[in-house]
Image 1 (tube, rainbow, N blue to C red):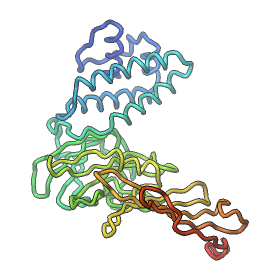
Image 2: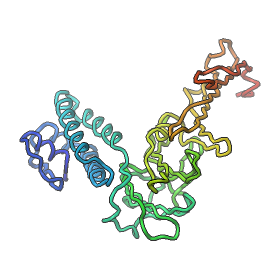
Image 3: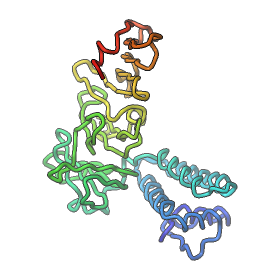
Image 4: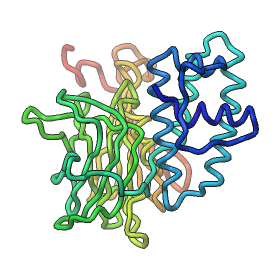
Length: 332
């Protein structure tokens, strides 16, 4: 088992020397509590390999400030060693730290396309108009599987990979016919590995890749990518990606009204529908519709239905009424 960059960095920090990135660590020579904890835990070893791959992909990103990246990685490692080696549950501490670092690094949107046999990748040609996607990840035959991946993007009719993106994790769902599920945002169900649309309403196709099930109530979460016309490539949007973490699955796109729509809940009896406009690629909530059957009405057997809207930068209640349970839900 190789522990790659992170444990090599640990040795480098201790001696003041930073070895080559291609070096690996032999678990038989583990010395520090951090090294021993990773060697003894398969999940931590996998996280170490995953973070190493993500870090290398970012180092190869043509638009990355590699000096700043190396500095931040060393600082992160130093802080993690100090914090986690001082607690009893070192494995839990390391697991949390690794996952947080992977989240902070995010996708590498300008990864080198060389070194991949794209002919062996899973081709997805029905997800977005004008583009084909090549998903290079560990093959699997199950209905669902996940793991790190490279995503190659081609224009329709071209064999040239115009952009390669490294994704720390991709969650893939297959349909009954074995083909990848795409462009599906059904609530409380599997959703598309790739969903496409014009998310910022600039007339250019954008797309999102499911990165797991880290949304509200274990729902699907996504990395969202917007097309940057001047640079002729897709860029990662942390802000639109966060909408899928905070709500129930992928957002709806109302192209006519130029709104993104999300759904959220709290327990069984509180539901919220929110609408966003997109300004300078940033989502801005402008309307909320609330269905509160959890006591917000202040009266037994009544449901509060309310609408709030952003007016001149301030939220205002534009409608509010109480409806009997039976009128809204029948005899449920």
